[in-house]
Length: 424
Image 1 (cartoon, one colour):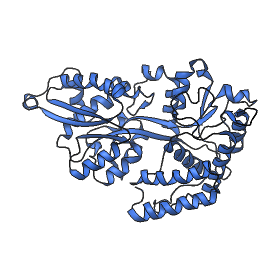
Image 2 (cartoon, helix red, strand yellow):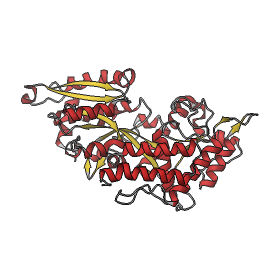
Image 3 (spheres, helix red, strand yellow):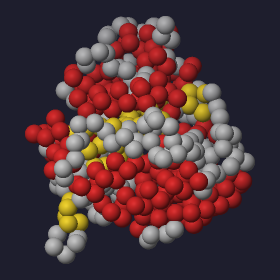
Image 4 (spheres, one colour):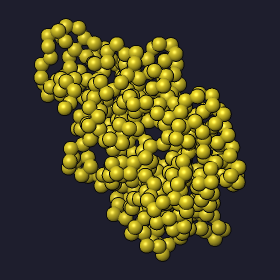
């Protein structure tokens, strides 16, 4: 059963009246929302007045914050005691925000059954539902079947192991007379989080793990992880020009990319090559030599939003988020800007999914095979260190064992030992 608050919010949305006492004094909610003024800002300019009209006891003051600066903005406000009622972020920061005591318990205001289960797990820390998923994506191995099959490979089913994966990429890589790659058989992404997410899935697919069960020991230099690093290096060296595409979400190299592991593939192939949509395949990460028979789960990541622990207007803030994030026809207006999947469960046959078969496929992956990166309160620091050594591995050809030893040593000393905090 939904919480009473959700019912009250719903009644207000359809024009139900509020008690006179609620109208006696107007509550002001401050919200920071990440995005761009011309996209998310334009949608909020429509949605916020609609919410205020249906909820005349609440006034919303909101600011569109830049993706590049919001972490520092939140840290500065937290230190100065000036956090707004609602903040935005990425799922890899949930644990850190929660550990620092910045977030309210959202289980007191929202029903987890209204959300995709994997996203509730993704946004919880130490048993507390710390942030709400606004929209999410699932990183999985994706390929253009037409480009793969042009290399003489049957791409009707996913590659079953790393050897097949490599042979697919090699067959789809095209070079000019000078030997320069003109079509990428595999693109490793220009975004750091895609590379670290891929490496984590490779380690898992090979029967390894990034940390010990309690999160207190870095294990990315164990044999299974080093073998995964060696495979990634081989894949990049044969079939990729790292960083050759400045932005993954601009045409994926104008159609000259056969295979990727990131959530932007379906957006681009859908938007840029609608006539080839039926040839875009999706699959999870194939098992490695030391792994089992099952493919590794799709890597989940989400944009998230939360009521802050210091808010004096938590119930009013929850009513706003019920409107913006939980109501299906509202959240799709925001999630649709990036082609992502709403964290809130959409009714069966909802037009958003009916018109977007690949988004539906990613939702299926999240429901059946989604896997989040290991949670850690200092995850962004851990990821930054790991990506330094992944760059050494892929860009500079560093020996895989040396690169992973360096990553494990630095993550152990600079993050795990320093914080003394493991997993939930």
